[in-house]
Image 1: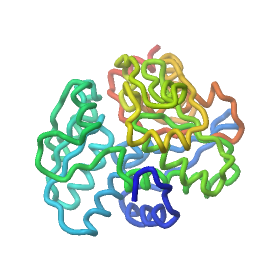
Image 2 (image 1 turned 180 degrees about the vertical axis):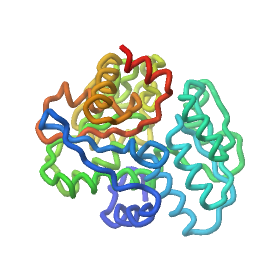
Image 3 (image 1 turned 90 degrees about the horizontal axis):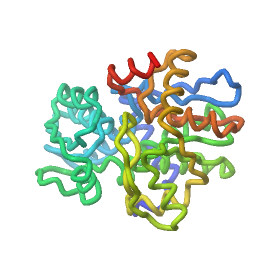
Amino acid sequence: MKLSEALSEAEIAEARRRIADSALRTPLVAMRDGRTWLKLECLQPYGSYKIRGAANALRARLECGPVTRIVSASAGNFGQALAAAAQRERIEVVIHVPDNAARVKVESLKRLGAVVHEHSHEEWWRIMETRESGDEGLFFHPVCEREVIAGAATIGAEILEDLPEVEAVLIPIGGGGLAAGIAQAVKAKRPGCRIVAVETETAMPLKAALEAGHPVTVPRTPSFVDGMGSSRVLDAMWPLLQRLIDEVIVVSLAEVEAAIRRLAAEHHVIAEGAGAAAVAAAEKAGIDRAVAIVSGGNVDRAVLARILDA
């Protein structure tokens, strides 16, 4: 099936079955404001929601036959999840990362046995767009795979079970797989729920694409928020995002840092920049019964110390 075709309920159910022994059913925790809930994907093994899509994609492929070597491109979190899933199956893995990836993620990849190649952001993004890395092996895209998106959709299914009356879900945007998965699961049963994409002021490709009616290239400023933001929406993801996203909220780096401090102080939760962005957006949106996706918690210690000490 094409990437742009809607996920079926059966695909999401199959994803839940495949990842049951790999991914946690993360809690939905109410914030003190009484209107926002946190979906704590930062509590997943290896610190991010990516374990859902990586485990689902690899196991779905193994159902079709053996695999000996896999390749991917990742800012770090998908790579860790895929390497962990591959390690369980004794499969070799090669991960291509941008040279500004958080060191905590790169070191984790190496501990998991992955061969890691670092590139400039531009070269890394070329691999993301073309799937051409020069390595032998089966390429798993961190975003543009139905099974990866179905893995993310399991988050939406859990949200509906825990908060059936949810009015909005705020989701950080990187490649768009997280938002596309959650949106399809939620809107299938609660079509009026708003799907709010969150971008930072340092990279706003989705906002620009929605305004232009097609993907466009925008400036991107590197920052500590390394798990989201690019210079352009992936062409393969555009039909899904155009159909599923109701609104984009842009937050500043200062607002993300304030959200990291709030999560630590009020909820004892450690979030990376992308993980805290949705919380920052929730504070700006002021929507009742909103869920903010805390997508990951892999932040370099020095970065975290600087933010907490501010």
